[in-house]
Length: 251
Ligand SMILES: NC(=O)c1ccc[n+]([C@@H]2O[C@H](COP(=O)([O-])OP(=O)(O)OC[C@H]3O[C@@H](n4cnc5c(N)ncnc54)[C@H](OP(=O)(O)O)[C@@H]3O)[C@@H](O)[C@H]2O)c1
Image 1 (cartoon, helix red, strand yellow):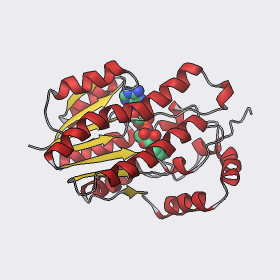
Image 2 (cartoon, protein in one colour):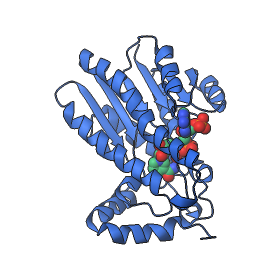
Image 3 (cartoon, rainbow, N blue to C red):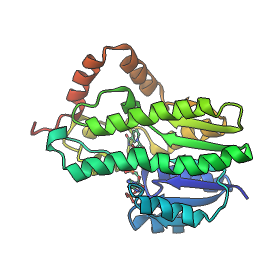
Image 4 (cartoon, protein in one colour):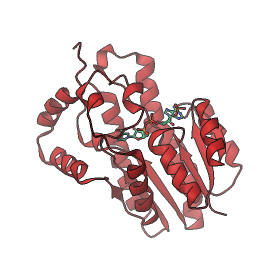
């Protein structure tokens, strides 16, 4: 039986990815940091690891749970954001965003990716963001972490060309999940935006792109246009525009 491992599967996009993987008949392992992951796992009929992927111990817990099994579908989706200005943010919170979004991905992609390459098969999906194309005024650490992931995923995919292993970067736009509340962004235009994308639609687009071995997927025309604009416009102009979207009401 094929094995799928999905991080950040307790809610939002990751929960939808896990639902699709289960419906597709894969043995599934779901990972997240809070106890709610156990409820999700029970509903899904999935194996579960409760682990903080920002820590070496959390990564070790996932690898120990795997116990030497090969992963066929690796979906590195766990991520967290943080609004407000960099100098007003809690230093521990800054560390947690960077460690989760960057090292939490690299530390699983490396050992599991090596095994995939040795077998000559496997698919990796990394959840980046169109935010990675934008200097993220009032969300600077998060956007920078996603710029890292977008860039890293595309490079890794190219490195693994002709090995049988693909790496797909899912770059969603604004999606209707708990992300904004958890990032302290509810008092911003970004957090209050209507018509956010449906996480099920986003997950489906990412999952299908992963199976097709595509290098990248930005779901939705509006998001594709926004990403393209961000790449064309001078970065300083994009940073100014981001101020309007992520500026807290009290700034
Ligand atoms: N929503 C958007 O507009 C949007 C747009 C582009 C990209 N994304 C990306 O999509 C991914 C999923 O986010 P979402 O929107 O679905 O938000 P979400 O509902 O808040 O889901 C985030 C998931 O990541 C897990 N997680 C966070 N920190 C973790 C840690 N240190 N260790 C283990 N698990 C951790 C959370 O689990 P716990 O609750 O247990 O911490 C949760 O399962 C993230 O990478 C996010 O950056 C979101």
